[in-house]
Length: 325
Image (tube, one colour):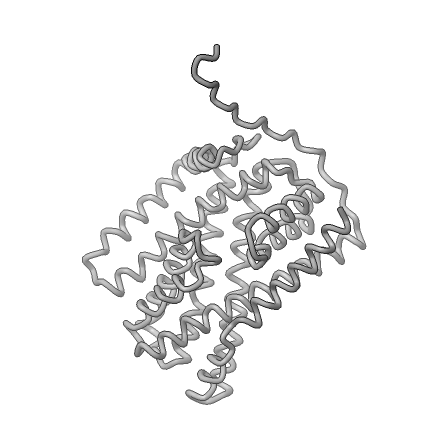
């Protein structure tokens, strides 16, 4: 198992390196050439830090769900499971990444059922908050005639905050569609509310990096603020729903470019969309590497005991063939 995990670590590092090398780094020189280099450099650095901060809030939302669905797990081990699972998206093919994430989770006290339950519940919250905040871009692009969509989505979020257990029901439905067993535990109302707030803050903070990039390309700061936050959230959420494309590549950039043409010429909007992918990738890799490195150092200095093994939920019973009794 150690040999396999070491091999996966090498594959992961290679996949991340390929992802970074495959980014269009030329957009950086395009942006630096547009205005004062120092100012643009500060905006790019700010966009990178903001992107990392947004991912940090996303981690807090995922962590809140994970800790609700089982016994306590030490912070370094939670970080290990999250960032290995998150960075596995860069590994070609979904199966190797899922296997590695499962093995890492199990080695750190998180069973497969708990990991899948956390994924289903977290994805429900990500899509719910993402579509709600993303509709802000629709108002800027299509006018006030779509404001009712924002109101409807806001009402849905309020309903979830008032009746958080609806999210648990939705997560169970997703797991049953995927023919996975229900999680052994369900998240408390307090845990779901905390995760909803943390995920919403994650979207709002992360979207600010697109705003800084748009300002660097000449967008008016005030009118473009809400548009950029909403456009990034909407584009990323739509990209997640496009499961046939890895990380929504192409779809996300198309939605961003279309939205940004409201405040920028089309060529500049395309540059910002590509630069957003670059900043997001670098931020994810940098924060993931730093978190995994810190977790490794802490665990080596102060090894935390693993929680008691979790009882895995029984698989869903297969339907009996016709005629069986």
